[in-house]
Image (cartoon, rainbow, N blue to C red; front, top):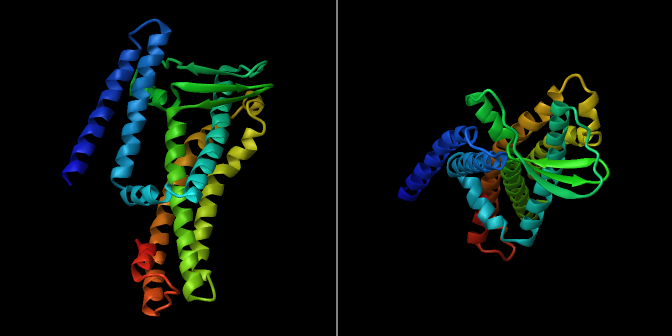
Length: 278
């Protein structure tokens, strides 16, 4: 308990520091110093929020993640989904940047660029906007594509990747338990659909937009679709996967009790089966 209190205090302190640090960025020069201060402020802001999320509403998810990521299957699921998420939302952010500045991305060679854009006038809103977009890590891929990554994108990708991994691996555990005790694995249908639905909700619209970005952004008169895809979809997906994980754990607990009570151990110890529900 004391450790959690200490970690919470540190994260809240870092979160508080990020705001004046971002404000300080607007008073320094040259531009490279702005990028340095803004980048440090954004990293502290998102590190704090992600840390607090895994300390409180997602604490139980963090414990599952620590167990699953050690396996080859778990590592593969996590890296694959997070990579896909970063690529698609990197294209979405580039669409927003292209629309805002009306500059088409014509790329002659591949290169990497770190960039921060000052947002005036300086206010709480502009600082929060800076946390959402600055700094931008841009990867130019010939002939036209650019992946623009922000700390917001990377933070949400990590959170969603963790939730996808824990959901998938828990469903696999339920499936194995059902295979031991029942002829039908119908109990895993709902949690499995929840995982699929959550991931599809997050990726379907970005896939369509990414096919045309940044050209779509340049010819569109309504950039709202890009902002919805960038802000609303990842957050909604994370919330949906969190609640799906809650229901999956309840199902796992029931399956574990049924398996043990019917004595369908099939060579496994009772202790190992109880892990399904924890």
